[in-house]
Length: 395
Image: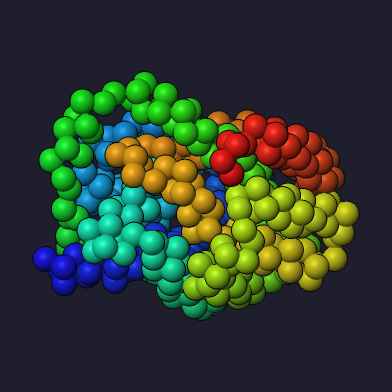
């Protein structure tokens, strides 16, 4: 059983590779190739996607804890496959909307589920304390391989913008096969009994008692603002005169940086210290990057900012999840609680992406980015101070 369970590590690594959208670098520009699409509609697509995530994230994570994490991962991969299919064959705005809806639904079933599944796997192997190191290395490969593809894929746009989506469809099929082959970790009978006898309201109350939601809120708000700005990366770079063929190189460089950081997640965690120091680091770094976008329009500086944003935001992902798991520990509804940050992100993103789309059309990219930098600091600094003042005495 241990050898079979051990195989989940490399199978989940394959899943992480398949999860990455290799066409993300040209996504915004691809939208603009569809008749009738403007920057306003890019905001609408992001709005629809986040709205779907908001609707499905809560029940999907709760359902995943109920039906089992493996079944949820299989369901997720099937839905994501369909989303790429709609993007690939899109000929009008409605196909893009359906693709956005399905992609959000599919990733909703991944929200916290993968982390919970691997946490249970490592616990079954007696390696629970190695979570950051194991997941960091797996996530590193999960970013590095798509980074290489992302660098190569955009060169195909000279032939057709559809080719990156065709490659994505093949990867989604591989991901579905990997999900089907995962081995279920052993679950104690008392775990099953507690899951069956606990409702969602009770899970929320338990999360509040753990003081988990305030930490998840900080991560969710930061992700929402950065996600909104990142959604306009391609069109802004195109406006600055940067050739589309280079988008994959820049995107892949950011993912390669993320892969490097993920490989050292355990060491980075030890270097940073507690979650409060991690929050201060995020405020400093992301605040500086957003302010730079708002004040500087030099194309190469803008490229560097987006590369750093891409690399740092994803490269520190397992460190962030590790801090959250430190709070959750042996809770039976890990996926439900871990998905909370995504719920908060989606709530904020629904309004932010639409507002940014309208702002870009009215005031331009640079001024809009400056506004969002100010909003980021105005929200995160007071939130961090509140969390620090109300932290548990034991910490």
